[in-house]
Image (cartoon, rainbow, N blue to C red; front, side, top):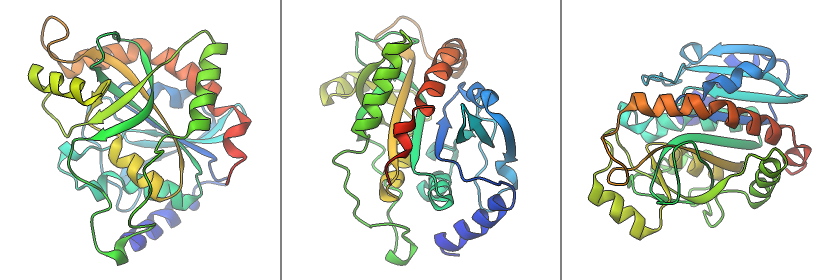
Length: 278
């Protein structure tokens, strides 16, 4: 079955359950799902019910679409993304992006838990993504032309929207919750990086590394969504701090800083300028 046919079946399922199209979608990374609890008049859809939707198998990713109001703005919060390392194809990983774009979402905010590569960063910092490096060496747009839902060769010169970056910085300043800024790098995982790999990433210019997000952003830009990326630095990458790394530690730090990120997300989503562009 072609991708467009899968999306249509999923779209019919979702449209039957909601009365208003979300203006903005927020994908919530590991341990960051509590933001969805602040949505008013929420309609909750289990992703397991949505036709063709991949199931998340990672702790901290519950697998739900929560649709409702954030300060009057119709918002979709995605609790539980899927990852390439779970055994899904990149087309499956990015299926939710195609679905939300076809639904009518125009603005996408992606959040992710990351390892800090920049030695000036510390756990709990929030980083606005200014650009990214694809070291997963895969691309979700690979495939036959008839299975494309947008341009086959989308421009990636500005994957992260400059106006959204400006808005986010302004909201952080007003709330006295400042952001770092930096370059995000995607590796497939699920193993963490070695110390030598981290040194390589530093030389390449990366400030943070994670196992998600870049494939989603590629498809979002193919579908002409305005994208804002926010990384939560949950740990220092291998070789930059004492001791080893564990997913439990990532979730613990994300939960600790999640309330702060949730406040920032509410402020960003509430900003009317996000929705005045086509």
